[in-house]
Amino acid sequence: MPAATDPLDFLSVDTMLSDEERDIRDTVRAFVRDRVVPEVGEWFEQGGLPRELVGELGKLGLLGMHLEGYGCAGTSATAYGLACLELEAGDSGIRSLVSVQGSLAMFAIHRWGSEEQKQEWLPRMAAGEAVGCFGLTEPDSGSDPGSMRTYARRDGEDWVLRGQKMWITNGSWADVAVVWARTDEGVRGFLVPKGTKGFTTRDIHRKMSLRASVTSELILDEVRLPASAMLPGATSLRGPLSCLNEARYGIVWGVAGAARACLEAALDYSTTRVQFGKPIAAFQIQQQKLATMALEVNRATLLSLHLGRLKDSGRLRPDHVSMGKLGNVNAALDVARNARQVLGANGITLEYPVMRHLTNLETVVTYEGTADVHALVIGGALTGIDAFR
Image 1 (cartoon, rainbow, N blue to C red):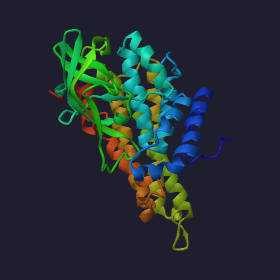
Image 2 (cartoon, rainbow, N blue to C red; image 1 turned 60 degrees about the horizontal axis):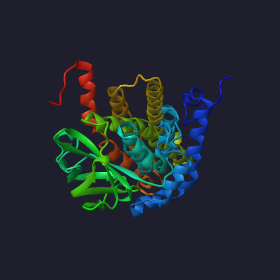
Image 3 (tube, rainbow, N blue to C red; image 1 turned 45 degrees about the horizontal axis):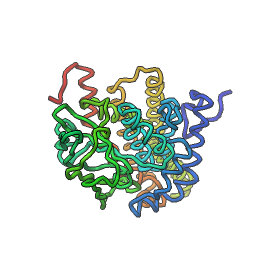
Image 4 (cartoon, rainbow, N blue to C red; image 1 turned 45 degrees about the vertical axis):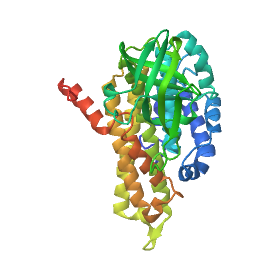
């Protein structure tokens, strides 16, 4: 006979994973349960994270874990996705820290950097000894990165950068910023070490979402860099966009974890909260909410796993990732909103994870490509017509 139903894995996705994938998943889940969940409400309320968390994530091998060599774990894309799922079940800010470090900053150096740049930065970043950030978005350039104003000009053997980047995760923590700029030779990437003259950061406060995360502005005022600071392999927008696709893939998995955490909270609450003489889970309207949430959580997890298998086999396309991000983030938002209703007034407090996840997801639906942009990517793939220009 089949095993009894697991309310959090209704479709037995666990049976589709390898032993190694389950081991990685369980290790990250235990870390989140023991280290993150007990304190993340306080971190969220205070509006930050403990810096030592980076080293702890490095010791677990989670930073750049899907990259090969240079101290990186070299896991499968599916294993990386499972780690993102468990991290975001704790909080979107924790997964964002790992995504920006590994899929944006480290991936940019790994894919587009010189051997010297890789040797200098990747081992320390994998160990959590150095933090990276990724400077692409600007105050007036979000969905259209081609309109960026940050400019780099040649001055003898050096490059001089001037501009501003906005909404940069890990910004003020970063020991190195991967900064993208227009040049007369196309869009190029540059490694800007912390402390470089003219390079400053300013944290963004008063956020109502993604509070357990460091979000900053990068200011580049005639920043002079040697030629060796430029990423030699990237010569167009293809460079930063390839990095964004890596990060979006992690989001597809991550939000499934946030949705699962909300479902778990709703199940626990509804089976213990008694009204009218019985648990509220006994009422049909609550069971309908729970069934709908379980459907979306399992559908999102299955979609994530399918995209992971496509990525591991080299068949994943950017429009696949757009469909995953659009569908899974919207599904996770629906789950979180339903869970908030199940919990009633308790759903708005930090004693429960639901409102924290709900507000975080309102950021996730916007960053790494808004829902509208991903809808247009999918529409373009379906029709062959580009709606952006």
